[in-house]
Image (cartoon, rainbow, N blue to C red; front, side):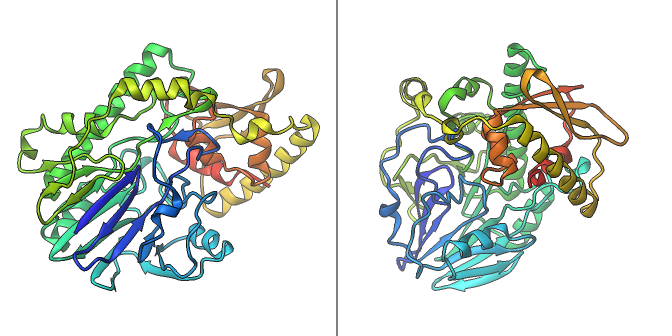
Length: 421
């Protein structure tokens, strides 16, 4: 097989017979409520990705399924996981995509000359699984088998050590592993209970944790090749200063850190830039790899991406009176949903409205702390009206947090995905 990389989690997998499967086509800057961008300007356009036999969409997050520009022939099959709430199915069908190939968790199907297996979330959360009732609801991973080769693409569905042992047992040899190496999200960049110095310290701590965990998985999988994949982005617009504190790094840095691990010496690490192709059979890149130039990235952010305007910045400010009434209704609906899925909140959660007024959303039972949230009221209005989504706003770094103590409650953050009318 050959892998042609585009950006983030977008790539084209091609078998020796020419069957092409496109994955997760996010091309245009501005997902996650306007802030997520590619760290270099892409040459690829959506129209350049039409000549494929199928599209695999791993989950509904917009850096994998960009609803704004997902524009393909309705005749192209779309491969999706059939598991849980299936939000993605509903979105695709609403847009007229009815040619869905639905694959159950751990099921294998034949698509032309490629065998495809999909996997539901391996764990609720790789680092906080024991502290969460809900956890990961939407991600999927894929294994492609063709030409006597096995490619494992985890996307954002990071496995734990046990899952890797089961994958190794099932597939025996893995030629190429493609696994996320970053921790996308608001921590520590959006947590203002931390000083700038503490944010930088937490940033480095997160990177070490992520890559140490990745290394432990690679020790088990022992693929012939490893490609750092997915979770590659920077923040544009007025929040671009938060790039200094994101829990993310580049794939070049990821590889440099992994190469220090003696237990991974038998694995070849590869990095790809836009349009680069890796030939698994011949074990080589079909072009010279050009390392990431961090100075060029920073200049691109400063000179171009920082000027982006988020969609909600063009909205009028909402009426506070109407907003408060709708917040009360949304709070009642949230309480009903929490009861239905049996979430017991362990932190108080408050929204900061105008004039630093705190408006309570959740009262904790067995309280372990307080989480205060501040968000542009125009974006909050969109969230309440279901035009935007709390989780996307959070991942996009649009929400400022202040928590005491600095305790992470996974279910509080997951629960807020259901906060709307």
